[in-house]
Image (cartoon, rainbow, N blue to C red; front, side, top):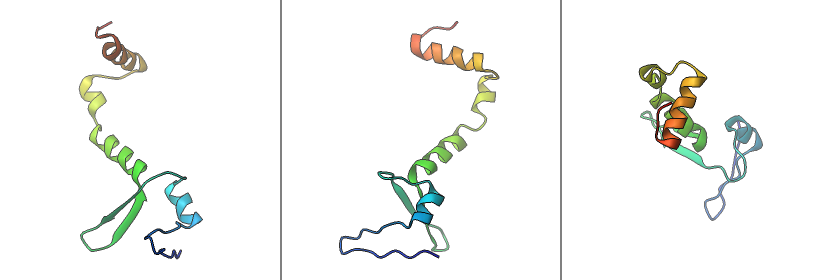
Length: 85
């Protein structure tokens, strides 16, 4: 268990063990949310955003017929140059 004290300004120092577990470094943002059972969860906001994006794009490559790095390069070229190759 780790303990942190809240300053008069509402600031806390996140213990090093927790920063390591969450992959936090100076300047990172932390996300706080409450689960339905009332439990408060703290996470690395950047990691959470990446997980949500990954979840949102699950299956997109298969839907678009992207099966190789060449297919990815074709898509990048279409976006960059506005043409199909």
